[in-house]
Image 1: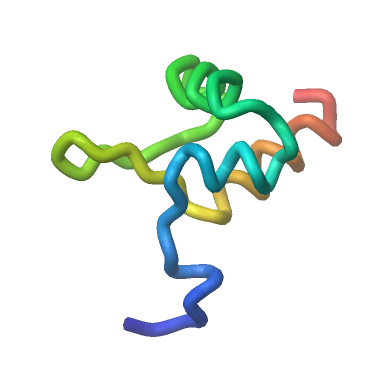
Image 2: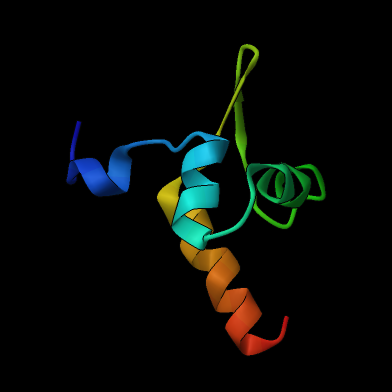
Length: 63
């Protein structure tokens, strides 16, 4: 695998919530609404760290 662990590691939704300082329930809502893009692996939902950064950038730009 190329790249560092921080850029390659997929996040669980509770990890996303911790990074953003929001509740897990609200993080799930953002994922369900597609505001934070996610990946389904079987029954598991994972988020790329860069998707969290994209979400924050969209908030800052007013998108």
